[in-house]
Image 1 (cartoon, rainbow, N blue to C red):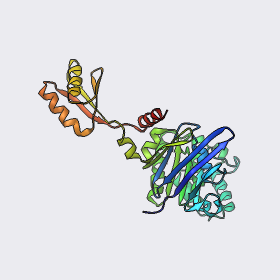
Image 2: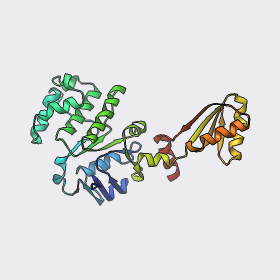
Image 3: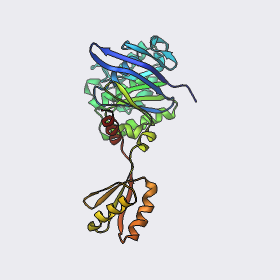
Image 4: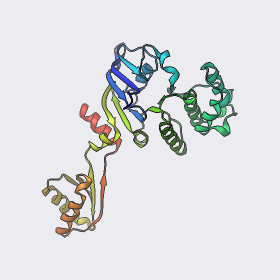
Length: 302
C-alpha cells in the first residue's frame, strides 16, 4: 500500500477562546477521492489552511506527501488547491490569469490550455473574467489548482455556484483525476454531492473528527430498511405485526411498511407475507444515505 497522502496527529487550532479544530487525527489514503464533510463552521477550512501552511497550528503535527507542514516549501509544489472563493484579475482573460500564475509558479505555460480544457472553459478562455458567471469562476479556480499537475488536489467547496450540469461535469473531472493517479481531498457541506463522488470520508463537527473510513463502511453501519407495500392498504398493520413477531422492528407509514432489516431478509419477508395471505406489490431495500448517517452520528455524539 502506498503511504498516506495526508497524516495529522493531534492537530489543533484555537483562535482565543474559539476551538476551531481540536486534536484531530486524520489519515488520507493515496489515489482516492476523500470527502471532508461537516456543517459550516465545523473546522474544515481551518484544517485545510493548516495543511497548506496558511495557518500555524496551536498544537499537533501533520505531514503532507510525506513532508512536515512546518516546511511547506517541501511539498506545496506538488499540491494544487482551491480555498473558498477564487480571486482573479477581472479585466484579464481566464487564459491570461492562468499564464500569470504559471509564470509566478515557474510552471510550463503549455499547461494553461490543457487545464482550461479539463474544466470546460476552452470556448471562454479569452473572455475577461469579469464576464464569467459564478460557476465559470469556480471552474477557473479548479483549473488554477490543476495548473502544476499536482499529486494532491485540495478543493474547498468546488461545486459552489455550479448548475446541475456543471456539478455533474465536476464529478466526472474528479474521477478522471484520480484515475490519472492524483489524490483528491474535497470539502463540502453538501452531503448528497460528497456521497456521489467520494470513496473515503472524514466527518467533522465542532472541530472534532466523528468518523473516517470508507464511504461504504459508514453507510453499511447504519440501519438498513426494507420498504414493503401490500396490495391492499388494510394489510399494512398486519404486515408490521408479522415482522414484529419475527423480531424485526417495523412501522406503518400510510400503506408503506418500513422494516429494519437488510436486503438478505427480503425473501423471508415475502415468504412470511404469502403464508399469512398478504400479497406484496412492492418490496425494495433502502440503504441509509450519507445525510441520514451524518445526523445519526452527530445526534449520538451530542
